[in-house]
Length: 182
Image 1 (cartoon, rainbow, N blue to C red):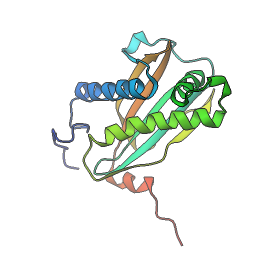
Image 2: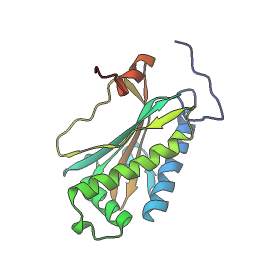
Image 3: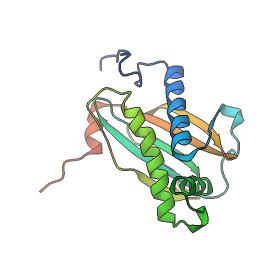
Image 4: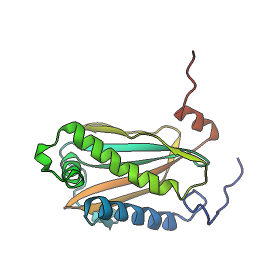
């Protein structure tokens, strides 16, 4: 497979320095949280992780970007924090929200991150609908993908983990949108 070349017009690919991708992703997440929620998020480095592994349930939302660049954007946080974010986003008390409302809002926040990231990858690209998983003991795996950036943020005293993964092989791109018989 030919080595990817850096293109400054589309700065978020494996050909870009990891530190530069990190800065771009941190800016996107910060901007989304500020504009959609009126909340600040603070980038944390390794040992600064606030709560290690949360003891309660967590929520993960992910979206796929497929096209000139193919990958996945995912974000995980404690379900309680997802509820706080949903309440702010919808302008209601988080206790009044259904689990579906919280999942929809968390998926939309991750969709905003993916939409901003889509502008930084080679076109043409499409963004899928969000998938949301919640629980206390789940493992979330993305086959045929490698992590480009995984960042941890602090928000309201809890952590948010944002990951961007890139497909490893061109053949894997077809696995996102399989052709169904019929």
